[in-house]
Image (cartoon, rainbow, N blue to C red):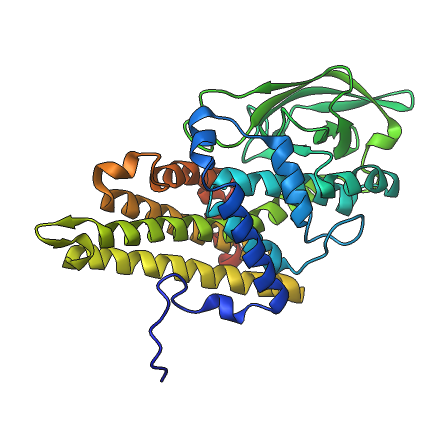
Length: 391
């Protein structure tokens, strides 16, 4: 038995099990976040703004954009390394991890996985450096959990495609240079690479959000957007294409929310150690210590889940149900941690001077996007029973 007291910030010593490259990426992202993001994120959240171009260049210089992809200027890191980067970004704010996730795991991954070589060469190198931003158009006002019912349609007109429809809740939509848009065709659902400068394409900012405010969200309107035949992904048909991309984004989430949970736990630990009531620190009371112990367990348990799923992904044995498990379990743990930590800070818990309420509000969005908790529960139920209960 070791006589060394466990580190309160990494109680199960999870980072000691990371490979050297993974530890280096963790340290680099954490340092960048501390120097460039942490002191500004509360203001971005309060004003509902984000310096997208500046962030894209910064993240690109770190090699974070599409970092788990191979070639085309992408870093080609391990899946765990990408997950750790997501964790460190979301420890600052879910909106920052979303920025990187949408760029790398949705827009870039879709082009890398399903695009033509011409599409890859045109977009991926610039997206990896942050010189071009992408968004991912799947969700619609009336088609969220049931993407197969989407109404956006692409029809042939000679050798061209003409797209019409509306996409909703699209991260980075107002600043994107290219949109990956999924649409119904006579040949099933297909994906299209749409330069946002194309006539008929409009991105309208979604305002009045109470969550994920340090993130740019848009409604995409496609009004007779004419594209050449080469804009379509050449091979993939049906929901297999978009769902494969969503699985990549969910993977980033299940790591990312560990960072949000950790930030809430650390804020509660620091606060209760420094604030005194009734003649001693709040952390000296039994009820407070019980809450800290609960937070410690949630954060470390979620970290273990994420790391195991990351190792499965790197080994090539990851199933999409594993990702559903991680997304459902870890977002639930993070939300529980945020809510408990918020109460431990008392009235200060609702202030942007502390990160907890911001994380708590963000996690309500994270619970919903990339598959609601209910949909992931049904996926897991089907996985263990063999019976589908979606309809």
